[in-house]
Length: 357
Image 1 (cartoon, rainbow, N blue to C red):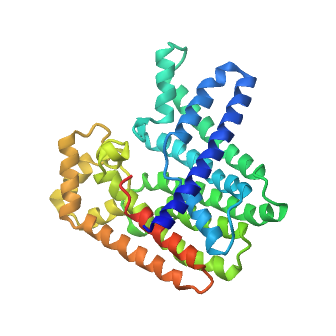
Image 2 (image 1 turned 135 degrees about the vertical axis):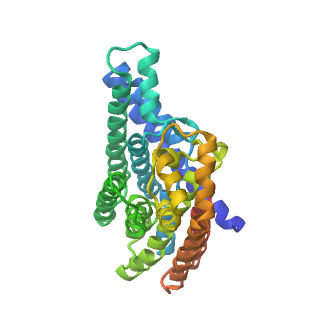
């Protein structure tokens, strides 16, 4: 990454961090004015949102602005920061649906509130308290994403242009999340279904729609927005495929999740679909008897990892990531994208697909 581009992305990330910190300070104050018993809510959401995060979605929105010849104003920084609250909603609900114990090395939101229930010896059933809390905190993050966008200070014309994209992004995300949980109920794996889930659950709202979001703020032409689609969709799928690999082979000290977490959760990803399709009868027996067991030992995780590698599924996913990324970068040849935008989108493609978290 060139030093100029790296500095530009870091400056944008810092600006988003400032806006999110200020917004959470204001919202936490408001919640506490309602009741001091809402302190765990404001504290948990502030920690979840501010302690870490790559800020990829605001960065892609920023690239969408710059690629269309626009500039980043304070109001637009607030507007693109709203995408991080949508991401918080998605992650909180995703952890709940997957039964994940951790996120970024800390207890997931539902586990955090479950532990509060136990520690404070509250009445009722601790897991139910954690579940309900996570649903409500995820919903609150979704509401706040809309609130931050609407109060960002962008012009009425800019807001009018960006709202249809923001609405579509949220609908696609929820559709993808449902397809993901529905996939876990199917009797067989299917690569085409897994790729559809990768596109809608993660890829589109991580890359394509944030690019459209930024382009709309900059008043980009329909033709330029379409070129963002040609870049964003394959890169979004590559992004999710990298996530699938990390869910099986990621280093816990880096990912903040246990090794092989997706194997314990029984996540039917493209990686697993390819593995199932290529596995021998003996391997299929081991897969079916271990895959989705929340109590997998490290030895069982290693066994499943070895099967995935030996079938060639992991290397095939790596090839797919490269092919999709190359397809994405080829779309940058569109004449309407500014040179600055090409540099940003090239570096963001590397950041999205070569990451370790």
